[in-house]
Image (cartoon, rainbow, N blue to C red):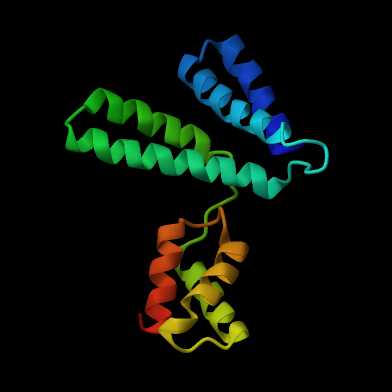
Length: 149
C-alpha cells in the first residue's frame, strides 16, 4: 500500500470515528498529494515526492508552534502539536542521533570530505540517505561538526 493509499484509508476511518482533527489534517496532506499528480503523466509521483510533502507539512507545523508559543496562544500550540503527531505517524521510523552520526561519518569517508568547503557535497549525500529518518536541521548540525564548520 502506498503512502497516499494509506492516508486515504485512514481518512475514511477518521470520518467513521468522528475524529475531526485527524480527518482535517489528512485531507490537507491528501490535497497536496493530489497537487503532485497534476504535474502530468510524464512525471509520476514517487515515494520521495510524497515524503517531501510530509516533511514540508511537519516543518510548517513546527514553525507555527514556535510562533504560537511566542504569542502565548496555548490552544493553537496544542492543535498544531496534535497535527504534528498525526503527520509524524506516516514517517519512517526515526533514527537516533548515534545512528545518524555513524551514517554521516560513513558519508564523509565516502565523499572524501575533510574541510568545511565540502559541506554542500556531504549535505547532498546525507539528505539523500537520511531524508525523513531524522530532522534536516540535526543533519546539518552534525555535518558541520564533522567538517569543523
